[in-house]
Length: 481
Ligand code: GLN
Image (cartoon, rainbow, N blue to C red; front, side, top):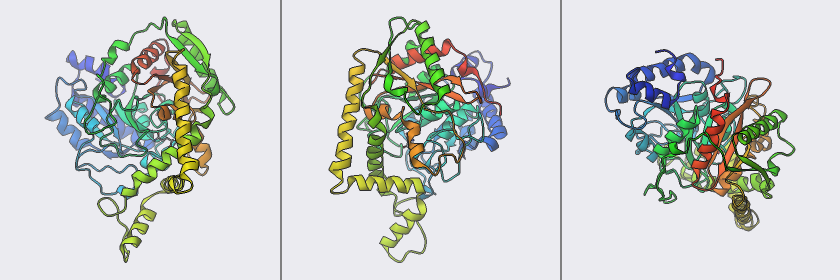
């Protein structure tokens, strides 16, 4: 059967159940597709061909929820014995001695891991340009960035080089690239998915989540990776619902809030028009739409750029050339070895985050910056608590603009940081949020719409997103590669 690579996991499961295809045909289909388009897209940093073929031939669990389904991992997820670099030279040669919990869960359900996806260095970025491997390209226009930091994962799903992928999201890194590549990306509630084996960026914000071709696959992949894990004390011990029950086409009685602070100066006209049209579709499906206010929205980016780098500077202290990864040559003593290793091993954006974070945490500045940011973070969460007393979910744009050109913002960190104005608040508040395709720009670039809900209410997100998807055709379009 041709074009297996372009199908969703749930469709492939159906075909396998009817005996019309098998894991080996699917895997070879995906590899053949990657062979053809990868020179243009550059989404992979490590191909797991041999391991994948072995898994298909031997151990794949035939009855698992993801039996025989190819899944691509962001390169910050540890796989035992496989190179894991976070897109950074400083982790060159590092092979983790253990699997991330999500990796273990995927394999237990029969998923076939096909390799590692490119990303911004240590997930610092919105464009995939800070990777030590060079940028991934947007499959819809290879002169453009795919978004970031999970740009490789999103581009590979959009280009049909994999069936599903995992990304991580600290300030938008799953949702923004999903929006810019025209696929579905979900950041689960903080605590829904174990972070064990995810190389940490900002531990109070990071979550792992699915990047998929449609909402049903997102629900399927979340059901596999979610749940309590004793190896991550921030994972929450709540039962994992059967998310497929939430996939209904009826939105009657659903109250949707649209925050007025999200439609202000800086939003691209085509993005605003597509999202407003999308809200119209939700209304026509029976939802009740009302304007709400999230008054502290304007402080979210500055708050994030204190909390995020503060935690990052502390998490990255371990990369010092002693235990693993890269060590610079030619140092005469230990201090010089640290300095040379970190100077040569980290890229510019990583150094910028370490400097920002160290500054905000130093004596004299801690109260003025870090503590203040934590207080504002609470205010932002309270805005959402209040909003959710009058609505069940919130709909916004995912990114203020469609994909921009490679190089356009690379030397202007502030304009890059503003790519995440709409996605950062969900991380600061710990909320689940999805991005789904809701339109295209005049030049054919995808536009994404974001749906947020209360903590642990991924079901309302899936219900809203699924109904929207069934009522529209945007998710069916494919890039012309
Ligand atoms: N783009 C944001 C940043 O640069 C978010 C990254 C992320 O979610 N990992 O920090």
